[in-house]
Image (tube, rainbow, N blue to C red; front, top):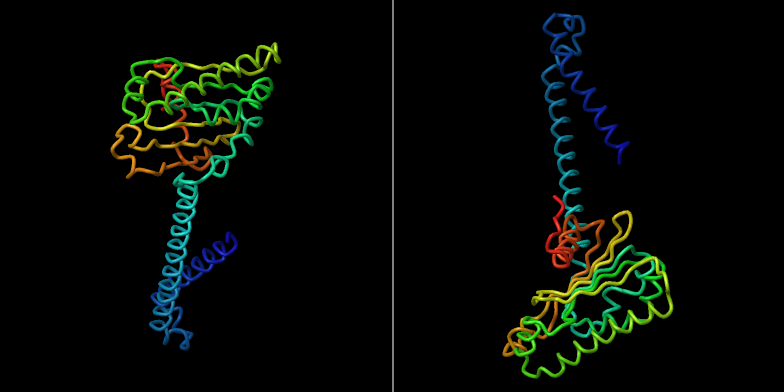
Length: 267
């Protein structure tokens, strides 16, 4: 593509040079000695203008095609990982285990996270021992937000059970680290969530801007029980740091702000 652009540029420069030289030669009378050329100056001028016009049309069309292709690539990279989690298994959207040992840190945010913690509770201590830094935000305590959300459920028992499962898995991970790894290179911290989040997050940070995140937007039915039959699906989005612009940083910094209210976002 670069060679083609160079050829086109050189050709256009030559044509432009000829278009400038011929009128000068004709004005000074030099072309009078060459009747074949002097008698065809109008035709030559129109031909040069036509060539330039065709070149400009082709060049603009090429740029237009590049813009279309760039838009299509952006659409594919931005929307191919947005799915409705109806019967989709979590690992089919993002294989969380595959990123445990290649990441610098892992952020987890959610009401109770029982499924994620259950999936990771065996391998997570090993990854922490190797250097992974983990932070978890969930309902570790019966806060006001937890009580409001629990009371909003038509049947609060499953919600309470899921929360207790998540808490139990947190304790098991702490116990596994204390028992099997005396001086892990990484860390494991868990804080109580004091509000009702709009989504859950799984955020892996890596070197060279290779991080990846999974964002699951909660259904309105979690807050509005009567809408449960309407909102059966959950919107799930996987974001890659290297092609998402500022979106990955937005969710990562959102977690960090919830973790530490004094956190200052990067500009």
